[in-house]
Image 1 (spheres, rainbow, N blue to C red):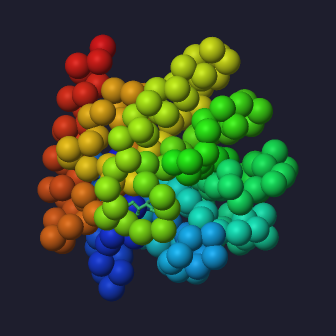
Image 2: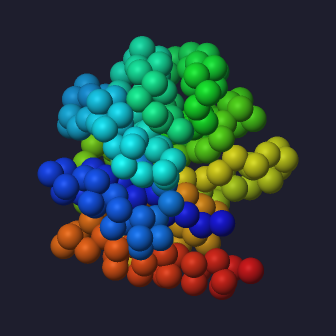
Length: 224
Ligand code: DX5
Ligand code: ZN
């Protein structure tokens, strides 16, 4: 099933609860929370207190994408704040197996993220232990960037690996996913679609989410 994980990075922060409710009414089923530290990526966003603040305003799962150095140090806090899924960047984790186990031990679904320049095959050893793999389709740090077309082949490659290894992790994609790019990533195998600016632009998250999902689902009909 194809799901919309709307990224609140592009939302109106002064009305976060309303924005989440609008995206949810439009069919969004996962809240994607972009955590940036100003070191791993050249931008700062939010931390566990924001996760804790939005936890009571929605029943949807909170998907925390950690773009931070030393993520192990913060996993307990994000888990306590109410994260349902935590993904860490391959590039920040010299002991990735241990970091993913740390997430599992906190009762949270573990994910691993790869930047556009990181080969998909570098994930082979950890694929059996992840709930989802997030393929970055821009270099992380900012919303509103242009989708990198090679991401489509990278998603397809990951889908082939999943099949060959007999696994069932989910494939998430993040960055520049919008009405004009979403069908290509769905056809390649992505089923958790992160979108920020495509959803929250013009304060019309409900309408935007509905249209986005309609376009995404057309791609699944074509591919079967
Ligand atoms: C980028 C973040 C994304 C971002 C997506 O570093 O990980 O989740 O918010 O934004 P759009 O959909 O605008 O590319
Ligand atoms: Zn993200």
